[in-house]
View (cartoon, rainbow over the protein chains, first blue to last red):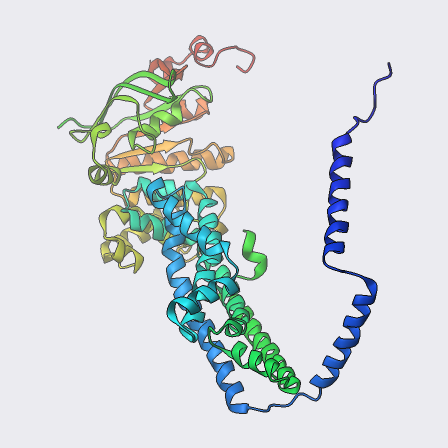
Length: 264
Length: 251
């Protein structure tokens, strides 16, 4: 019998067939047909038509919403960054005993497991409508993101530098400030500035479920069919986020933590 | 109080049943320069790291300054460690800190974390740091970041950091193995010179037998986790080297 140059892998084909079958099944379940798509396009064109020209119908409520979103983003970022620093350190298995790292990693995992919309709904139920719920929501998201990446950054540091500081007889906190932080601080600032960016974007969203900010104004404009106002709000959000991204980039450049620097 | 260092029946196994150190007993006098030679993987590094307990010994005693280092509590260990300066093969400087910060980090065991974080070093420490940088030939480099230095320069900073501790013992784990021959000699001169100035013993792991014979006052040969030679460098003949390293083609 001749030796096969390529081993047969029948299971791969079974896998592909099953995957394809599921895609077709899901499409049929959800009534995804071409005529349905054309109908949707027609509706979308009407909607776009009604959005223009953009018009600021309630300047007060728009200004208040935008400012509130900004405040939510800033306060949530400060809270999240301040909390994720110790939580991130406690989670690092190369520095901490398991009784410290396990709970801290569990906390980070919980913070990461839900989408901000779901967290926001929970906080609105827990602490009531308004900016407080939004701040808590985004603080949770910040702890999840910065905490996880910071923990990983600490676990990747060079143990040699830590060993040298340890051999001088330094107390534990000095071991952190001399052996560990210099190796990870620029990455921490990088993570934090990305999270500020992300919080600014999400602060415009949490209002949709009643957690404060411009999202609430946007949602009520939708419900009143004030599509011109909707368009004005969307443009204002775009402008705010672009300004925020530019500022975050400046901060990263000034502190010398460009995105290029992320993996060194 | 006995001067120097006294190691008694030191054993270390990283995995049970596979000892790396098999009962090392070694007395080191107050002014000796001891070179430990031997093939890779024979436990030289483990031995030196057991002394300041960067590696935890499995059993045995290490007497230094009147106390058994293997029995110390965490607090006692920290104050013992600050009297033991260590120089590393890969220099182990904190890359993103300045040369000055790296040298002064030798004082961390003597000050609170708060003072250290604020860089509030006593003026005499700062003066000593400048003096040491001058002595190792790095005057004017104090504000440079450690990662901008060459290998030889880094090792000089490493020596200055160790001396900054006012050590009663210097350990060096293959301090010249990553350096070129000329720089190796200079580093050894600096290291041995510092030991002379401080009147303290030095224990150095090394691979380079010629360098060991040139600088050490005593050579300890290790093989298979045991001491197989312990005498003056001049007694180290070809037969002895053969039994330490095995084989003879390399001679």
